[in-house]
Image 1 (cartoon, helix red, strand yellow):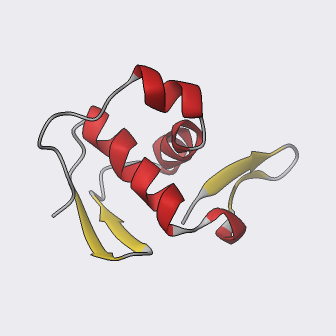
Image 2 (cartoon, rainbow, N blue to C red):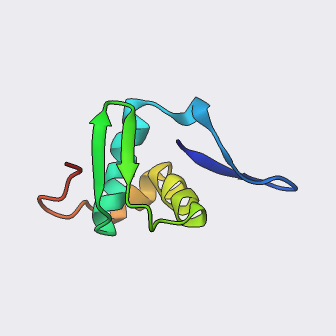
Length: 81
């Protein structure tokens, strides 16, 4: 589930951001950081349980940043299994 930061609330789910393109971008970010993941379907991704909520939010933010994605190509051969 994509996450956003809202002042006076903190980190919260943002289901309206969830689509295949966003999830593809999250996989891109995870590959840069070499985080293990498993893609169960077009809209369902399992990530290593050691990834904290704050780190998940960070990855969501980067997945929404076209410039960051352009400047950080995915690791060759890296993908979710």
